[in-house]
Structure formats: structure tokens, C-alpha cells
Image (cartoon, rainbow, N blue to C red; front, side, top):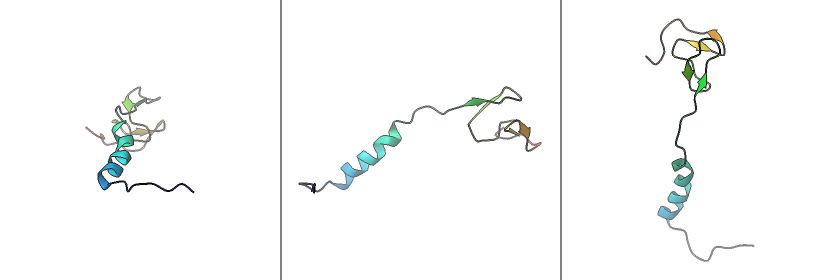
Length: 62
């Protein structure tokens, strides 16, 4: 069984865990099929549409 020779410090362990989060750079956006506006996936578009149908009549994120 593999056993580590030395203890990994808390800071080094934290750096390794945070490394994957540092690689995230851009936010994905998709185009709404109904209106043609861009919004984040699985979110309501700014004009209130989600999956091609209107879910709210109020302006979202504006």
C-alpha cells in the first residue's frame, strides 16, 4: 500500500484544491432559439424566456 513519506501542509493541499477552480476562465453562453438573445445555460433569458417558452413577463437581469 502506498504511504506518503511526508505530511502535506494545509497551504499546499489548499493550493492543489484551488487549482481546478483557477482554470475556469470564460462563462458559457447560448443563443435563445425563440428570441436570438444570448444567456447562460439553464437560466432564464433577459426577456423572460426559458426553453423556448415565456416563463415570466417581467424583465430579468436588467
